[in-house]
Length: 561
Image (cartoon, rainbow, N blue to C red; front, side, top):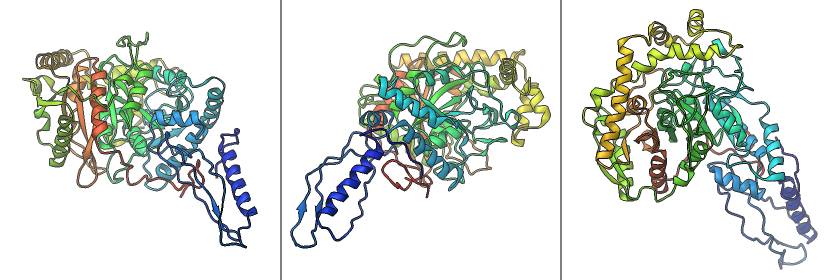
């Protein structure tokens, strides 16, 4: 059994001793029997146990002796809790960051390493408990630094960490530790977040089913025989199974959005330039983004608040002002006009269509106006996002390695020459090596990027639209080993536009479906408002069936089954 040390009157140890004292008092009243008492954990940080009375039957009388009513603090259950609920519980003293870390580590041990063996987490930080203890002590001395103070976060393993390996999922880079944290990681640490570990990804972020030579195949917690999406599928599966409070992924063409759809999460691909990419192993220097994946809109907005903004080392980055969290209001649907991109429903699975339409109906029933939003000529302009990042990958990755003197290889070509990668990537890697940014096809692809952005934004302005909506991916998660098709990633990626996925519902087989909301440049507040308004009306989130609550041996520490 893992225990936290007693930290004073409000600590778990103090409460347990108090309960023991109550039983002693009861025993002194003459009871001849022993009663087992169980305290059930609660999912809310705001509730407290009502005042209760304890009745003891004396051995010499049929009357009862009633002890004075004693209000007890509610043991806080982090399962399903939002960042704000966890912060409230930390302020109340009903949980600590140390206990929160242990809670997630126990779930990882039970469901990632054993049980369904989701295989989402590649690396855990061995100093996470010590960091949590230091942050608990800092909170007692001077209060929290930010809403992320003491909150455990998982990162996709192409996001650089100076104290843990960053591998892009390839055995060729096993054990490689970058010279510095990525810009967004440094922001998270400064906010008091705990980087609990790194998650598996589709190797080199190069596909959407999350299999890698280093990490193997990650499984979907809603059905472990199916993929979790990708390339940020490790983060998606981990946050759905509640291995951390929130996660960070990267998106070049759907790599945040597809796993968010497949794992019943909220996931944001920010506008190109809203969030820095410094320190991230690249796939494309013109289409890569880094963004949050979360179980609630408010949690997503909190992470965005603390990671977005100007980075002098990223020429795309911009200055940001205000708070995205302020946009996450339950009335966010009111007065919004949402255009439906009907062309992106083509050939979609009927159950996916059903759930996305139902989500749109719910939005319309609670204040949004839903209209046709097909952008004339968009399909002809869009083409494939691959036409850009295929040609940029080698150049971008080689530039990253050049800035890492401890990297075991100096180029993508050197890695490919060793064969140290998953065999399913062979064609893609060979194509990347032969592609060039010095040809007419690449220049034409860049021109189409500008045309896509202009066409979308001009149409939205002309029709007074706040967002465009469509299925994030037109097919449910495929069986592991089968090809995954149906991604609708290209419009946002080519246009450099923001896109936020919301959980739309489930197929008859229980597989999650996602609805994607596309906005004009730097309209993340509007997308967050729509998502929050939808979340306020949507059915409450449920745990994936393979990662249920663990048995609680005492109010703070779940024991492994």
